[in-house]
Length: 261
Image (cartoon, rainbow, N blue to C red):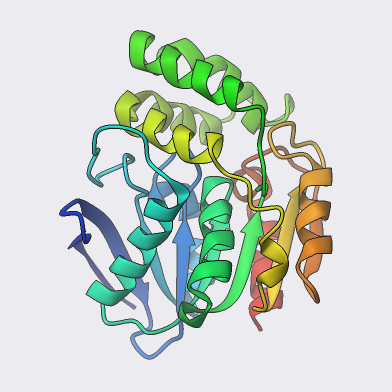
């Protein structure tokens, strides 16, 4: 297994950090992280995924080692970052797996750049997360008070009480606290302004929707809406909260690999 990493320049000049690992002749599986995390969130799945696929992970704009551009971001910008990244790496088409904000990016790709994806995995995500005022309040708070002001509430929504306090959650909390407030708020704006409900029936890629049965952030009914909207999609429910790939790492990997196979 080989590994390479770097930073790709987007069409607005921003740099997006990426890592590519796995068999060089394997099909490419692109992983997209959630709000407030980084590409490190996929570490629990990496051994299983990289055994079969050339795994491409990247840090969403405003997160990890990617550029923090100023102002509000749009979902269109985050989706075009993926297209620009694929162009920079010379990749025509990939399988895509995104969780939460990553799943929103995946829905955008399925509608606006379907030729770049073979199959979609949309995990713990939503086509609409209102009300906009709630996101604006969160943006204002992190911009004024920093990430610590929301960290405890976010972690409580990301994991079930039984899983909270484990070493895995401590790593996630550390990443959240180290996220740039400007980048976090910029991505919050993309969610604030997003409403994909009317257009996701246009998605014609084979799609797996993963739901967390105890997810208060994107509840099971959000997954059901996406599943019903995308013809022929498959729905899998895991006994987890929002970051289901961290809380149920083996079950998550098994569901994704079974679908992709």
